[in-house]
Image (tube, rainbow, N blue to C red; front, side, top):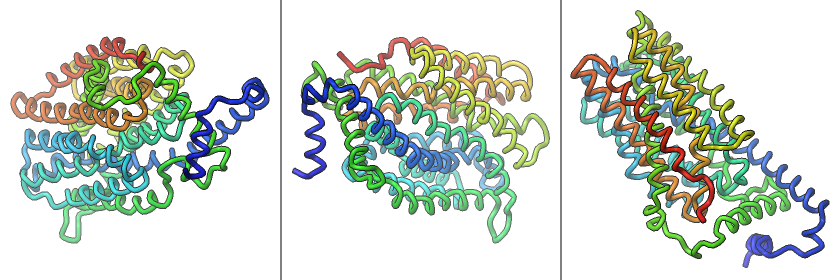
Length: 451
C-alpha cells in the first residue's frame, strides 16, 4: 500500500476519543481544510472559466455567421438550424463514454485531449462548402467536446467538499455568460478580416479554433488529476481535502448496498427528473443563443460588430443574476425553490417576447436570460447531492448529454418554423411553456442523498 493510500485509509478510521473531543483539534482541522479549498479555487477555477469561455465560443459562434453561410455557401435557414443542432447529437452519443474514460486516464490527460480535438474540429469549420460538410463538422465538433462539462463537474466532486461546489459551479458557469458577452465583439471583429483568399467567417473559425488548441498546452502543465497529485498543497491540506471527500461519501453510503451500478440508478425516477429539468433549461438557453443575433439584425441596419455588442447585453445581465441567485440559495437554502423561481422568470420573459416588434423581443429575452442562466447554475447541486460519488461521473454525463439535446431541438425547430412560417413566435412560446412545466417538476427532485 502506498503512503497516500495509507493516509486515506487512516482517515476512514474512527478518531481517538481524546482527539474527537478536542475542540482545538477540530478547529485546526477546519482551518486547514478551508485553506486547502481556497488554494484549489484560486488555482483551478480561473483556468476552468477560461476553458469554458473558449469552449462556448467555439460551440455558438455559428450564430454570427448564419447570413454569411447563406450567401457564400448556400445554407438555408432550415439547414442552418439542423446543423446547429447536430452538434448536440454528437455530444450526446459520446458524452458518457468520454466521462468514463476520464476516470480511467485522469482529468489532466483527458481534459487536455478534449480541448485539443474540439479546437481542431472548430478550426475545420472554416472549410465548410456545402450543407453536408456543415452537418458533418458540427457533429464532429460535438463529439470532440463531449465530456468537458460533466468532466469539470466530476472534478469538483473529487476536489471540493459539497458545501463549496455550488459556489464553484456558479463561478464556472459564469464562463458561458462571459463567453456570450465576449463572443459577440470578438466574432464580429473577426468577421471583418476578409483577405488571404478567405472570407471573414473563415478567419473567425480558424482563429477561435486555434486559440483552443494553443490553450490545451497550458492545461496539461497546470492541472492535476487528484488532490494526492497536487504538490502545491501541503501534506496536511491534501489529507484534509481527501478526508472531507471520503467522509461525505461514507455518509452518503449509509444504509445503501456496497455496490450501486449505473444501470440501477438509471431506473431511478429521480434521474429522469434531473434529465427533464436540464433538457428544459438547455432548450431555452440554446433557443436564445442561436437565434438572438437574427433578432438583433431585425432591429435595424447594424454591422457585424454592432450585432455582437447588442448580443452581449443579455448575457452581461445574466452574470449578475447568477451570482445573486447563488448567494440567495446559499444563504436561505431551498435549492428547488430558487431553481423553480429562476425557471418562472425565464418562462415569463420568453412568453412576453412573442408580443411587439424585434426591439421588444430583445428586451424580453434580456429579462428571460436572468432566469435561464441562473437556473443552469442552480440546477447542478441537486443531482450532485443525490448521486453516489462512485458512479457520479457517468450519471452526470448522462444527465448533461440528454439535457443538452435541448440544444438540438431548439435550433432545429426554430429553423423549420422560420422557413415555413417566416416567424419564430411559436418556438418562443414553446420555450415559455417548457420552462414553466420544468419549474413545477423541480419540486419533485430530491437534492439530498437517497435513503
